[in-house]
Image 1 (tube, rainbow, N blue to C red):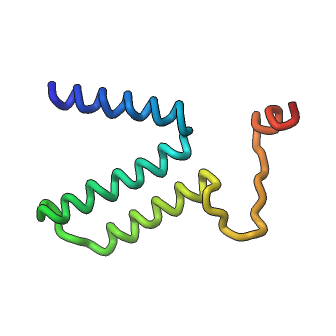
Image 2: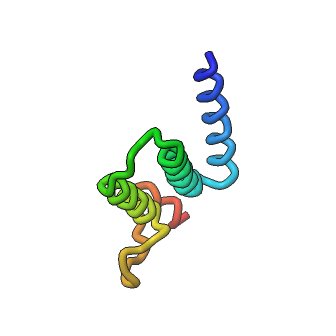
Length: 91
């Protein structure tokens, strides 16, 4: 029952963050949450440090930042709308 309450509170807070700040901010916030949980587990010795996990986490973070167009791969990358975004931008 406690798990159900915790998940409900988490989803409610996520919906509020998504409404007020946007989905991109929520993705970045989720990366920070994953990092804090991982660091906590390492500090209380529930897990042993593994370099491949760190490399994987960095890969996930870079992928999220590039996908959400927070971090561009190069200076020549420009925003190119796809699909329905073109209609919204033209109107």
